[in-house]
Image (cartoon, rainbow, N blue to C red; front, side, top):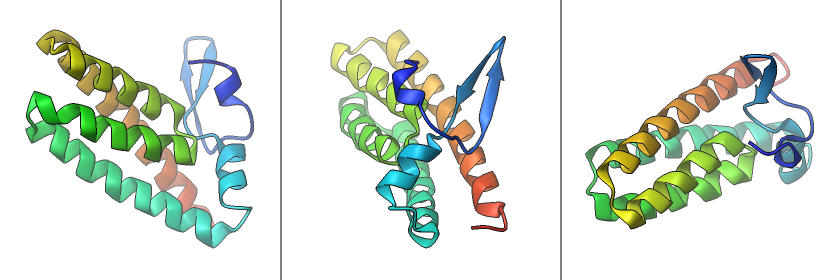
Length: 131
């Protein structure tokens, strides 16, 4: 992940060795929701639902359709500052164009892991009394 994309407050971090990887860029999320907590809550809930639907489509989808589903997730993830999810979806989009089953499998696994991590971080955020 690039440091520039990870600037700002985060909802939750995940320790990876000595480095902490930000799951959701809270500063970015606050900017796009204009600091409105109700709007933030709504946007996060929409992301969780859409992410689940897209992962279902990926799991049962044809390789030719994976690119379009991944592209949808790229935009959604960028919208809330879920940079790892966006990066994983970008890799899946590229892999689907190449058509390599191995690369697609690896990209799908990475996307699922990043999505689960983001969903858990969002769940923790939404459980906070201030939300």
